[in-house]
Each structure stands twice: as structure tokens, then as C-alpha cells.
Image (tube, rainbow, N blue to C red; front, side, top):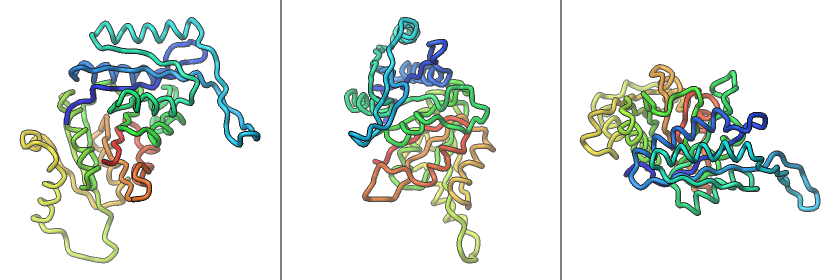
Length: 289
């Protein structure tokens, strides 16, 4: 596995200043850092001009209301594109009248992108854990991995935590976390949380715990396994991941969708849903394989 070389960034522009929001700038800076690390990278900035929507009973659905891209907004986006190109990263913009999540999905499919970056919120939120409605919809609907970037954090994470349930999706989360940690020189941790037993039992043997720890890092090459600190916790899954992330002061948590619904493979599981709305840092969500 390698760093993504096709990246889509969702842009939101401030209606007053016309500049990209703090969240969008953080997402763009993270994309730039990643693109510089990946060979042959290409970045697409997607800006939706949808400003609002209304319900039309004739078609029985919400209809978007679109605004115009004024010169100031276009200039702000052009300056962002120029920043990418000045670093040798090919970059283009797409203005669209589709809703942001639909436009991003279309570009992901068109570009065969492996990663979407969006701002977690616009940077004016008092609650760092809060996530904006657009970022939330993209996390739920994107066909590829999504990195929701907290504007308060630096582009290069210093501490990365991968949450794994020891399934193929959990393995993918560990692999993604290792890629990001290696590129940024960050400390890398992996955690496997299992719910408390419903009946009394003796403590797990050391041999069993060693097996779980080995399974958690099994998808990584041997030279990377030694750099991962593995944590095994018995708790409610979301709470176990969240508490460890807070203890480590993790900048980025990487996890899979963790849904076991075979009829809806892209459905986000309850553990991930809880993390999305409770974790104050950046979150990289990996789709089921």
C-alpha cells in the first residue's frame, strides 16, 4: 500500500470574506503535505455553489438554490491552486451546482481518487468535537477514505492512533495509519477494544493477549510492526478508543466503518458514528474492503 496520489478536497468559502474557511484551508494544507510525499500526485479542489435548498412538492425532494461565484471568491480559490502548483503539485478546481457530497462523490469516481479531505468544521466552533453537516454527509457517503481535518491541528500529525476490530477493514485502518505516521514521523499506536464480558471469567492469558496484539499489526511489514505500540482494552468500543485517543493526545484517529451489515457494506457502524461526534481531533475513516 502507498500514499494516495489522487486526492479530492472539498472547499467551503466564507460568504463574507469569500476566502476558504479555516476548515477548508486546513484540509487543503493537509492535502498539499500528503501530495508532496506521494509520487505523481494530483489534487482536485471541489467547490459547490449551493447556498441553500427548498422542498419542491412537485418532485417530492429538496431542490438546491445556487449562487454565483463572484470574482473575489474565484480569486481566493485561484490563489489556493497557485500554492499547490508552486510546490510542484498538479491541481485543478471544479465549480459545481450539485450538493457538496454529491459533487465530491462524482469527482472521486471520475478521478478514481483514493482520499477525500474536508474541514471538520469552519474553525469557529467552541466545541472541537462538533462536526459540520457537510463533513458529516461526506464521511457517510464518500465511496473512498475520508479525512475530516480539525482546523486547530497542524497538517502533519504528531501522534496517530489506529483502531482495529481485527477484520479486513480494521487491517486497512492500521495500514493507512502506518502510511501517515511514516510520512509525518509521528508516533504510531494501534488499539483493539472488545466489550466487557457479560459473565464473570478469569483474566485473559498472556499468550492470548500476545496473539491479539500480533493480529493487530499483522497487516504491516515486519520493519513497521516494531514501531507500533499496541493497546488492548476491555470496554465499550467507542469509549475505549476515545479514552485512549484523549490519553495519547492523538492528532489523528484512523478507523474503519466497522459495520457488519452485509446488505449495506458502506453503512457506517455505531462505533464509528459515536467517534465522529465525540472526538475533538482529526478523523480518517476507511471504507470496508
